[in-house]
Length: 268
Image (cartoon, rainbow, N blue to C red; front, side, top):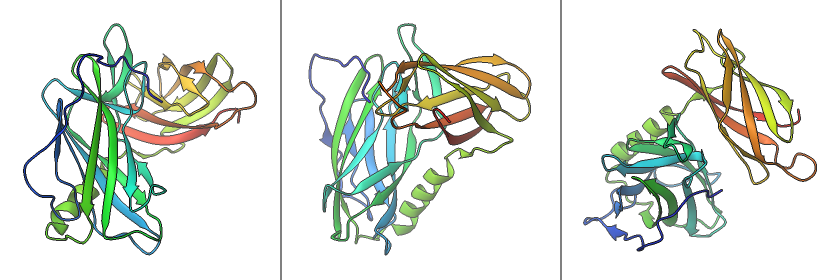
């Protein structure tokens, strides 16, 4: 889902940072407001799974977006284009921050970060891989960024540093939600969804981030309550005309310096 006011004057200039790619990883590509590259842990396993990470370096004052930014922004996507376009990529997201710019409220990051990736490659996967990265980076206005990155999966000269980057990216993810720290769906409606959240050690600063699907889009959750259990009222911006469509909703719940991620099913 792309919801942004793009800069319409000028085009994005993307140029390659000098230097060859390191160890099963792409070279850096400089983009307006920062730079991006993809790091991997080498050849895929017997099931075609390959762990990697998208490194996003942001210049001071620049920001990028969560999996569902909200009222504006472009969520990151990483697509395998070679050896075949049917390769799938799963992206993990650290807990975001909510930004209110007056004219829009959105979720994202204001510091450089590394997003964990899991590639599911076809049986025909070769020693070379190309990926297309698309994301938004903003200083004041959201700028769409497109980068084409090539990876030599047989180059292991930097295997240990690359593996450490990937492991750190996965370690940055929120913990799985639980009964002690997570949400329970209370109500599904066509205008709003209500969930109860259980948060340890008080909930004065609890925030809930929900990600829409191709069938559902949401506004900013509104919090009420105060003790260890709080309620979030989530405005529904778009809902399927009939039934519940893709009704698995991903969320991240943040309280203080702790965060968990999980799902709830709309209509259940």
